[in-house]
Length: 272
Ligand SMILES: C[S@@+](CC[C@H](N)C(=O)[O-])C[C@H]1O[C@@H](n2cnc3c(N)ncnc32)[C@H](O)[C@@H]1O
Image (cartoon, rainbow, N blue to C red):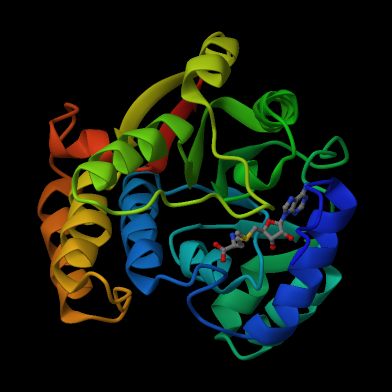
């Protein structure tokens, strides 16, 4: 099958088609519910501490996660996505929420790379909006745009993918006789070695988590046990992998050995 080319137009088309089957799925756009739970845990831990007045969620998809984040936001939560079908579902989900949530949450169809018309926010979140940008240059451009829409010392929280983390994970999979995990055509994991130096002057990293324990257990040990069968993402082994990750997630700050194999990139940045 011929793969679509990774352009903005193809990407937007992909997410509009995806939105039709995703509908009002409470987990949002990721197929592995464990990863969504772990990302939410990381983000909500920071929101509980920060108690922001305003939050912007870029690439919000069907908005189910935006609405979960809104519980910790005092005044206004805005979700933006350039897929009009995602936003249609987000508005449907919002209609079913309590009055207090409806009062403070809204959704708009908007390209997240163009944010000049909005006021500044206390917190901006991105759950895999960066990996949907078609080049490292555009990812850096998105960091700059976000920086301009954050209040002084505001927070940017990202839940994205790291190219270096994925390379490390694939190298250890090889040692277990497992094939490389391939990146879908519509994704570009962040190349930390080239992107991070370009954003150093804008943001300092407050906390970073790669979900290493989860990836090591669910993407190396689990597939190695069931080989040559495909691992089932709903297996009890992945439930246990999630629990193992949670043991570490809110405690550790140092990069430890297992953390090295996580291809995820959860970062809490503070605007400089
Ligand atoms: C992987 S999905 C994640 C959706 C949601 N954050 C979640 O976790 O369920 C990425 C979303 O980003 C949106 N997106 C990608 N690039 C965008 C852009 N430049 N502006 C607005 N939305 C964008 C896509 O339409 C898609 O809904």
